[in-house]
Length: 119
Image 1 (cartoon, rainbow, N blue to C red):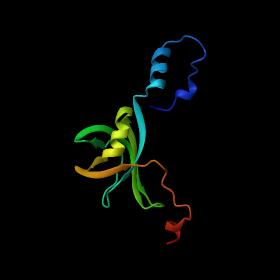
Image 2 (image 1 turned 30 degrees about the horizontal axis):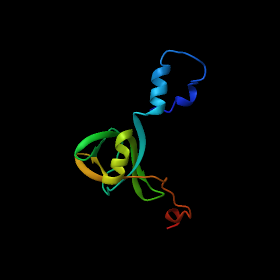
Image 3 (image 1 turned 90 degrees about the vertical axis):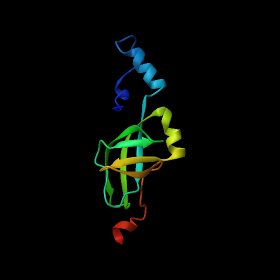
Image 4 (image 1 turned 135 degrees about the vertical axis):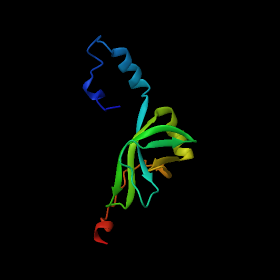
């Protein structure tokens, strides 16, 4: 979850936690996701619940308004087995007690011509 797996060498032989590290490498429990939020009046800050099919499925870790692309964005974690269902069914994020539609971002938001900054 913290992205520290690059510091763990599984080739060094036995160590405490090796089996758990191998298991997690094969089937990661959580996947980091990036979201575009449909909200004009409020943005995610962190710790907002991510809803899938009427149930809390994950949590936002951080978010805010991205001025260079003109979108409210957030990142968070979902259980790995729910990511494809979330992509197909869509998600909602609860911001200040209101449900806001959200969709997974597969590509980073980008304004290649820097049009937003020049407008």
